[in-house]
Length: 331
Image (tube, rainbow, N blue to C red; front, side):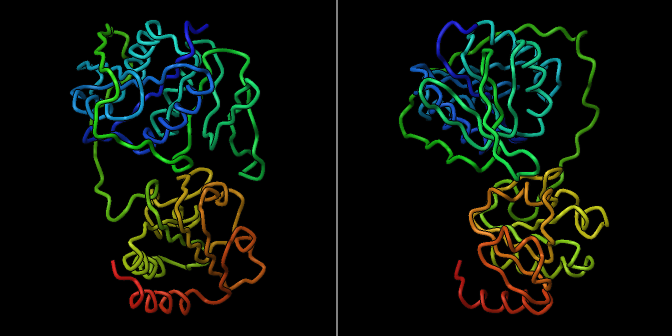
């Protein structure tokens, strides 16, 4: 059981040691919980050479930033990160733990939950605090139903989907105390080692953070069609996405996949071109604020999820869109 009503947000950093946007969003979720519990909002950064990130985080609305800086934490190693976290947890013992729903947390969060003998709700899109109870909301059955989960154990633990919460605002003044924590990590306990890392350079906005996404489906017909969509992306300053079939067929890079088994996105505008609207794809783009569908089949399921729909051949519609927008948009 926790010793107080504090809420701990686990912060993740990019390869250049910048705070991930989803972590700033988690701070807002953490603040909702901390206010509901009448407790403190705490943040934890784990890594190597991360003092600058700790200083940056101290400008946000929280009470304490804990920094665990250790050479064995230079890259993600499950056993090392789990060991570091559990040592910190023994010191802090929060009532709730919040993490972003990322590739790292998908691996680390279940390990933490198991070690603490507590529950875990992943891929949450919201949290509700009513009458002293806390409910974590997440989509189930390919996004067709929203389920609410309550805990019977502590700490409460959840991972939050990106782009479902506004990020915390940075303040000019320093708001939080920074506390460096020492941990002991046994090198002999590390069973996985990072041999080589290859970082692929992204061109254009990343799917997870893009305000506008243009996605293509099987109806695009081939790689040439995605070149046409890329031209529209350039005009819109948008990210290029896809449903699973084009990725499987090699028409577009696999990292462009949006869906239940791909990236889960929540842009301001999502343009679905030649996408039928399978539930697996809808689950990945259901957080989009405005959906525009372009499909030659007027009965395509994607129209049921769309705010605006255009029935027609994309080869005719997309160039017309691009031409019109080129004259309208002045970036």
